[in-house]
Image 1 (spheres, rainbow, N blue to C red):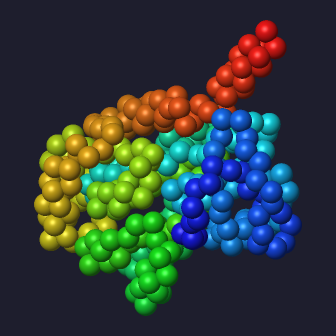
Image 2: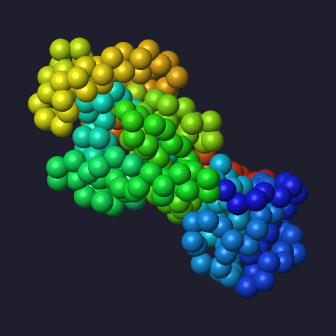
Length: 284
């Protein structure tokens, strides 16, 4: 992420062009930190926008438009993990369809991978397919929020893919394994982690065979890895059993709804109430 400077507890305007800070001005009840000019941030946001504030975030910066004394609410990051064949991608997409119908801005993060595309997979839609050399250069450039080698191939989540959308208030869903989920949570403690269980070994094997993507020995390897992953479920915030797809989608939707009530998500709603009380009491 971008370099961070010492927390001064003062507000910083990004100005128009140069890298100098404007005169600090503290907003009531909101302490922010000095950061580099907007144009230096890795998410590609325009530089020189007046009326924008830059605050600290797990990504290095959050850019929010001023609205009185209240900052816009960033999006939520949902980490969804399961054994291969557990159904996490289908469940995520089912929840996202419902959220979009309700007018919510959501995004399914597309991972980078070094493996070859499977039948019907599209570059930039299912995965960003890259050569191993490209992937290694991205690692060296600290461009991944998380990455791991799984079944002999590299997979990773780009910081740019996630960070910019969260800063703009978009909810982002990550479909990653247990190892990747651990890395993301270490960098983004506010992320919400959900683990999805298959209902039984027999059902997991049936699903893996039915999708016709792997040889028999690969399926057995995935099943053995599934046991290792399921034993890590206590690291997660929520657990869903994918026995019936409709119910599993409903369960994940409830997790999303609950996340909206966390203090960080309610800030933009409750701050005007607090301010109205403060103003009334000061006048009284």
